[in-house]
Length: 376
Image 1 (spheres, helix red, strand yellow):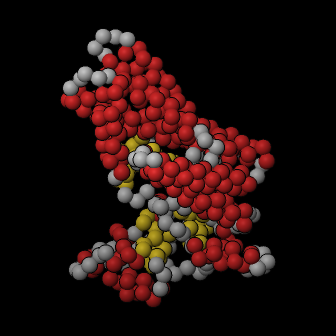
Image 2 (image 1 turned 30 degrees about the vertical axis):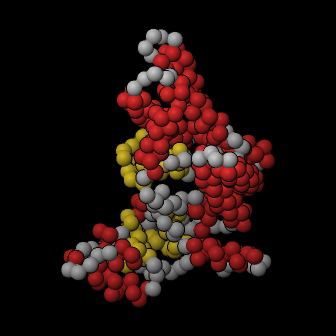
Image 3 (image 1 turned 45 degrees about the vertical axis):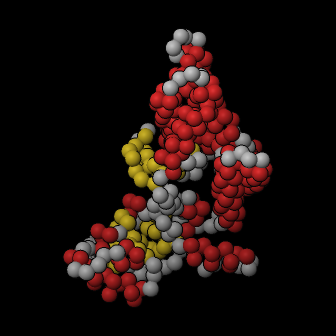
């Protein structure tokens, strides 16, 4: 996700944090310290409320991380590749490959909300217990608040609309019932678009009534609607490309360049003549080693162009989306992400035989709409 930075690892996968997370922590701490705690446990100093609210906000951030970590851990247990976990203002996001069975999809989807519900129940129970002890009213209130927020988060995430976890549950159940994965995806994404509109409407009504919390509902609804729309589009594309092989969509032959060339030589001899925004690279043995984008080449200025090899500013093959020509195109496209870019390198027996770009997919879709079937 743009605007996020790596901060470590969780359950063996990279953990990233969006710039909005500190803002969320400050917002939560402010609301807890200025309104909730003084209302639930009056008579304490501002210093006590400030410290307690800061701890409460950090505990909530930790519970959001556990929610996403549960998704990642279950995905890895089900042999699903996990790219990273990102925390941001609306909770979190775990980027992973597509499950290969409805049972795996169900397990991954339900693991996050169940974790939030367990945390919520445990925190609420602990808060009630502490509240009965003399001098523990403030810690008990913090845990009670944490419990209610996690219970609300778990219930909200179980709403049957993608991209919420409940939508993933619906997808898995429909996939299991009908055997049609794309149909299940379209149904869940439609419900997500409807939920997004409803949340935005409720947010605007709340704002008109003077509640600042309505703005949060508007942003949440907008996010749900946009992501659900994107998932619906992907499902439609998946249906249109069903049964299509990578070889049917790829462009071949491919303009390539040697990865040991200096940036200056590469620009003059390869990049400019090719007229492509990105060029695949080959090593000394003729095997693909990565992809370099023109913007990365342009960032190398002055004398550095004569001393920097193009491989040093390229995306290595390990971070590229790679497929064989005989694979299903839909499976190859599942490997695309913000890290890999929008192209798939087609490699057979260690040799680059083609490339699939967004233009290739568009061309194939238009060809199919004309009734031409698979292009030759």
